[in-house]
Structures are given as structure tokens and as C-alpha cells.
Picture 1 (spheres, helix red, strand yellow):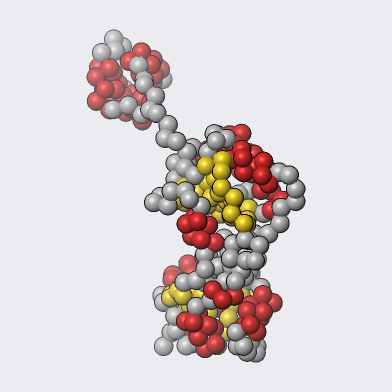
Picture 2 (tube, rainbow, N blue to C red; picture 1 turned 60 degrees about the vertical axis):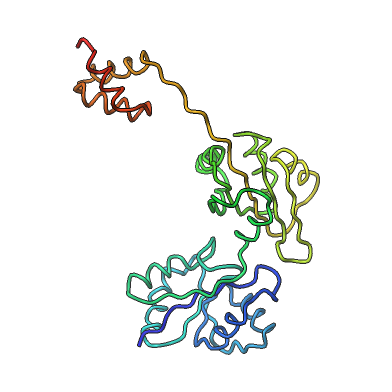
Length: 280
């Protein structure tokens, strides 16, 4: 009988955060797929769990190639667990692609929740928690990075961003330049570790705090939601001009009205009424 694939959340800093259930699953596993076998061996040694020959590497470069191997082991009845270096597999770490393959082949998936940098940083940020989005790591450079930053400038939900320490100040500055530099933000550094630091303020003030020296450690940025943008009032003249351009291009009045309503974000009834008054 096929065994379930077990995803285990592991500590993001303090080894005492691992649950007893997670420790039991690690001890009972026939094979452990790990982002870095060296990091997992340290965890097992701290728990006095023998690693033996049960550790197999599973990282972003080999996840697709190893997925079928994992499924075959599950179908053979082996107890297989997946862990990342820290936190939950599949969240900015290997695991999501493996789960997709396992689900597609009818395997059961179970999860043993654990420490989360995403939720941990969110709940201590002091920012809104009712609606939030996980952004993960931003692109490092180029147009793709700018597009993502521009989208975040208008994101009304609280956003969680992972960032490297040497890019933290630049990212805070980029966000301030593209939007409101008084927007609320919280930077959480070294969460659950000895040198845990939580800095709250605005994009400008927090950027200035970290801009004075070298930043080290694991970084989570919790960005407060942007202020809702007021709807722009669209005049009848603007709608008529859009309708006339559509009709001139060969559209029927009905199609022109549909296009104008979608483009200008006005009620269709209003666009249809103005379209019917066109002389051509």
C-alpha cells in the first residue's frame, strides 16, 4: 500500500521549536529528502536521531529529476519525509514541484506544521493581518524586478518579502521611491535566534535605520498595505472619444461600447447609451 508523503516544518532558528510529532516522524522515516543533508544532519544530531544512510539531497536544481524517485518509494510503502533547511518545504524552498508530481500520480500528502518565518514576522509586525500576500524573494535586477516593485507600490494587502541582508536597504529605498515613503513597514531580522531584531516604522525611517552599517542575518520585510486609490471620474467626452476611435477602426457601436466599458472601467449601460447617440 502506498504511504503518504510527509512534509515537515523545521525550526527557522531555535531548535526547541521542533514539535514532538515532527521528531517522531523524522525518527520513523525510511528516507529523508533534504534541501541540504548537512543542515538536516545537524538537526538530527541535536535530537539524537541517527541519520544512517537515510538522507537524500533534494534542492531546486534536482527536484524535478528526483520527483519520480520519491513517488516510486511512496508506492513501495516506504516512509518518506521532506524537509527544507528551515521552515516549510515548498515556501520559497524546494517541495512544491515534488508535491505537484505526487498529487498527479495519486499519492497522499500529509503535513506536520512547524515554525514559519512568514507568519511569525507577520504577527509581530503590528501591521494588518486580515489580508496578506506572500511575495517571497524579489528578482535581483532588471525589468522583472521593477515590474514587481511597481505592483507592490499599489498592493493594498500586507505583503511579506524575503530579502538578503546586502539588498535590504536598496529594496526599502526602491519601494519608497516607487510609492509612499511613509508607508508602514516592519523588518524582522534573525527571527527566533539569539540576535532577533524587530524594527518598525515607515519605509523612510526603517531604511535610514539599516542604512548606517552592515546588515547580517535572515531578513523578512513585512510591508503594510498601500492606501486605496480613489476611483478616477471619467467624463462623457472621454468616453465618446474612445467610442469614436473604436468605431473608426471598424468596430460596431455595440462592440465599441463593450471595449470602452472595459478599458475605461465605466458601467456598460453608460457606454451603450453614449454609443447609441453617435451619428456615425
